[in-house]
Picture 1 (cartoon, rainbow, N blue to C red):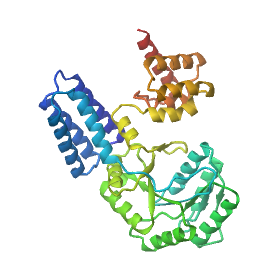
Picture 2 (picture 1 turned 180 degrees about the vertical axis):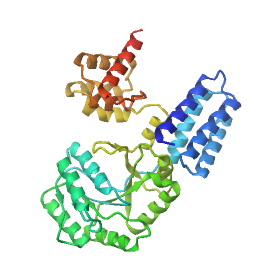
Picture 3 (picture 1 turned 60 degrees about the vertical axis):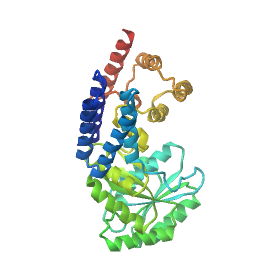
Picture 4 (picture 1 turned 120 degrees about the vertical axis):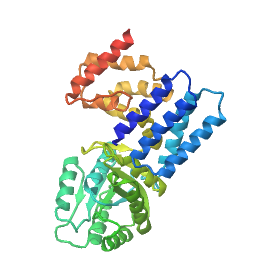
Amino acid sequence: MALAELGEIMSRAIQQMLNATIVDEKVFNEFLDEISRALLQSDVPLDLVSKLQTNMKKILNHNGDCNKFRLIQCAIFNELCRILYTGIPSFTPKKGKASVIMFVGQGSEKTICTKYAYYHLKQGWKPALVCANTSRAGAFDQLEQNATYAKIPFYESYTESDPVRIAVEGVERFKKENCDLIIVDISGRHKQDASLFEEMRQVAEATKPDLVIFVMDSSIGQAAAFDQARAFKQIVSVGAVILTKMDGHAKGVGALSAVAATKNPVMFIGTGVLIDVFTVFGYRRFVSRMLGMGDSFRYMEKIHEGVPMDQQPDLQQSLFERNFTLRTMYERFQKKLKTGYFGKDFYQVLSVLPIELKSEDLEKVVEATVKSYVTIMDS
């Protein structure tokens, strides 16, 4: 079951409960059964789902006289947050101060390294990439291609075979160039690869990274995800995790819950192949979107990309003060209709709201959606 499908099932279950005249025990049990089946099909561990059921029943039984719908909606939100809570990263880089970030994992770090660097580049950082992967042919070329496309400086060596020396030389070079985010990428590995694990330990000892980020393919599911996360944490001090392929695979939530069980905080989730498709993970925001409740925090981030600078302060203030009403949305839509441009930037802003946009002709479908919402609000 893909994440989008899981979200649709949960939203539909909540809506069915909302449509019920009375939220009695039968309605509640049907809701709970549907939510539980969806989570189990998404590879969430059985013990976590059972605990969710038990906690939900306790909450309903102890609060019989209040608004049951609101109570259940709040309870399912809190229970899902509890399952997916992963703590906070062990280190937070500071702009202007050199920080060494080491990427480890099971492969595809080249793309994720570049995405991580590009994300910070847009935020005003000065990132750099160091390729210490000498075990795979073409690794240097792949990182060079990605870094060149993103306009990020990189360091590599076609003559040196020692990944430790390459990593140390690259870090020293970029420290002299006053880069404040030095990203070291090493060979992809599995917990059974003893030699590569030893190499990973040596690179970590030589470069003394401020933060080690573990990159994991979420399609492996919760059992393998737990084993891999725990194995890496025993060798190097993993301070954060990035989960890839979270945009459509059935086991994404299962892998996420497994990582949460190891207390490895998830920093980002990969939700696409494009370099700018990189999502900061916040468990409350993730659950909010999964339940179809929107994501105002993500909306604020996208304001900087999709809203003109002179309009940002007023819109941000209304969001901070929780005054983002239908009237506010109406005014924004009207301004967009006047400009006549509905490209990718405005789609990114709309994508974090509970509005479905599915079409190959992006600009036309966004414009049609906006016009339909304006018509509804006018009437």
